[in-house]
Length: 446
Image 1 (spheres, one colour):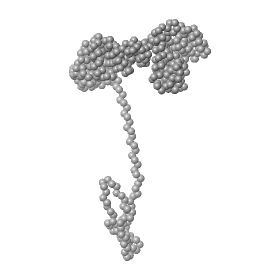
Image 2 (cartoon, rainbow, N blue to C red):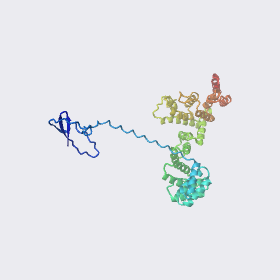
Image 3 (tube, rainbow, N blue to C red):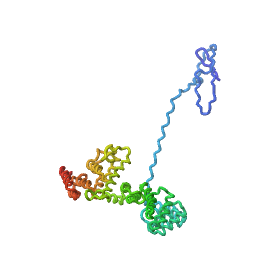
């Protein structure tokens, strides 16, 4: 509490003010005092007027500042910029770093193995072997070093030394999948069928999704005459996407070894391997297409069966698109997808159907080559031309006729009348006349 004499004209006012000082919890903000503070006002008789106190002596009236606007929230944190992935070193850069590390510490294990692996990758097998052996002089109990050395010795076809290293690797670490697999390969190469089977089975016990081991085990089981087991292993590899397994599984279906004989399934698996670029699958399909293309009096029971298998293969493609309705028997999956504007899905299917001798899909591809598709697909696609040339070489008449037109008119390539006539050679006379009349109706494009 405090009192203050304040002169107001000829009267003195005694103002007594009591200010409460409440206790605040730690961190709390003090509230401004209430507008009407506790106080008493008394009047006194007037005394002679005294001069006003100098400004410094007067008690300033306390004026609490108005509360300001709340502080602006801090700006949101800037999201961190994701670091760019490191650029992988080139083999030569890897060699330089490994050699630099070995110059400082010659007995370092990892740089020595890295040096050996990089040399092996670059084709310097002898140099790699030297590095692996040096690593083993310093670290003889490192299983991975024995495995790497065994792998390099296999590349030199030093089967005996390779097997010794692989066996030591497995003794030191029985869980090395690649060591068991490589031992299986050596046994298979040397004709030790039963030992190869056991090695591949051990690799698969440790890694069930090892596609290459399934494929190799399938081949060895086939050699052992265990066709049903062989087909099961080949199927596991084929389902994993291994082209070689798909090809041999197609062979099994073609001959009925270990599975029920089915040319449709043979075409299915060969087609998948062919799409991955496996030459053996391409050759198998070519032979079957040539058989299926035989017409008229030359047609045999086998050629009829092949043609029917290709037709059934195209029909089975509908099962991959259960959302599509087949309105007409002549409709194909590829043309239906194309009609619905699903171009990206349609193109590979059209190609599969055309390779399976479906003339409707073949015609659609020829149209796409000549005219493209509404800005979605430019004309003169090289992939379509490759299909036509491949099937024309197999003797497919529709492809030969299409190529004759393309070369005569110069569609997407330089016009070549001689080549156009070569594709017409040997075709039925009425087909040749029709194509020549069609070509003559339009001048060749410049």
